[in-house]
Length: 244
Image (cartoon, rainbow, N blue to C red; front, side):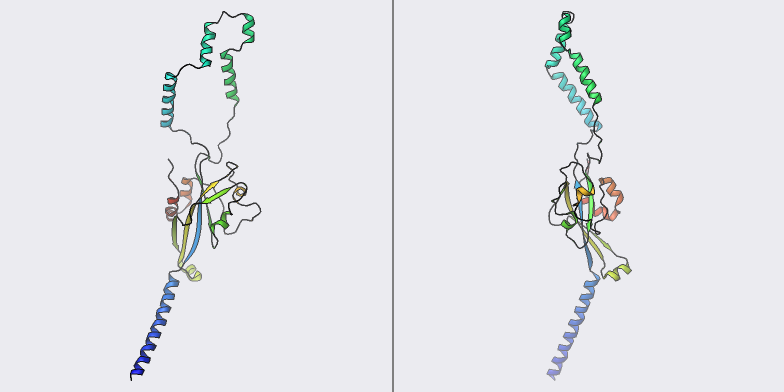
């Protein structure tokens, strides 16, 4: 009698354990998420931004104070000397010497002829590039950082943010997963060539672009906020410092 009860109890335990394993497997499958990785690459400003109205006012005030407190330079002393000695010079001396006024006129002409370079690429603002990868490490997406014209340094080995989303029911059943989790990393872009932001400067020329990498596009913080969905932006904005 006792042996039969023991056998029956053993069978019940085994049957219950199998049910628990099946439930655990089903629960694990229902909570399964596909993992993605994304890197937010930042290009720091290459030029100082334009002065604000307050900064221009302070600059003008400091320049005025400096002009009032400073001593005269050799150029100004020479100009005063020429004014005092005007009319006393001989015609021969006037032909050989170049007056201060003539020097200033030549400097102004050179300043008018000087042409400034166009500030293309928003060099005074930080730009951001987001590249996604699936089933690959980040170094496979952006290269090994040994390109001739570019270099990207990933900050740390741990992601700085995560974005979780769920698939529609048909997609979830087909993929056998609830949704996906995108882990965000931060990277700093630097280019020895200055502001070369073309694809050739970002990827190796001898490596074809992977189909897993989306279109590369440099945008400002405001443009990035308009492009990304609101929930996606909430996970990304923690990687982007606010602009002053």
